[in-house]
Length: 188
Image (cartoon, rainbow, N blue to C red; front, side):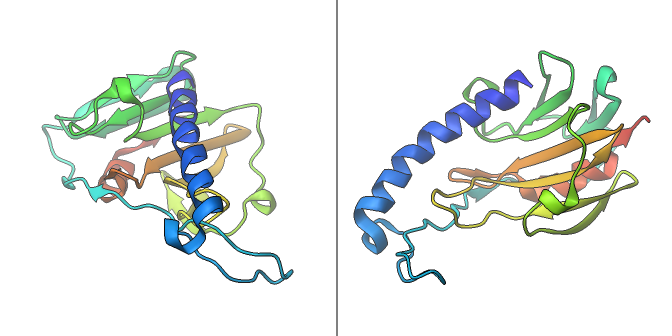
């Protein structure tokens, strides 16, 4: 989970700056303006999309990455880097265009065994099935600050598995996400 937390800290820092721009500049800063249903001013910034990474089809040269403590096994393109989180609860995959030490562009798979999946708590999203699980795929949406990733959540081992894929502002890794998910194997 350390890698995931670093990503959140790095992205949160960048988003605070963007949120300040949106609040001060409204539409001039790229935000949407207008009235919300409650009559309040809407200065949300739309989600930022980055340059899509090249998508590769799973093949025999793909490397295996595992997090045995979390029951996760998957394969990824040979030029991507995979790191196991410090607590062993997940994996972080980085495309060659995004060094792992920067923590921005990645596909992260994380298991929270002590957080039960609650579909009612997931706002929006569409049903999504992967690795034999019925989950929810949430696309980025405009909030008070822009979101930077798609998120997939599903019940797993009495808790929740969360998969996050960066969509921007610089790199969009979602073109590779579905191919990697085809290789995902979970052990009960």
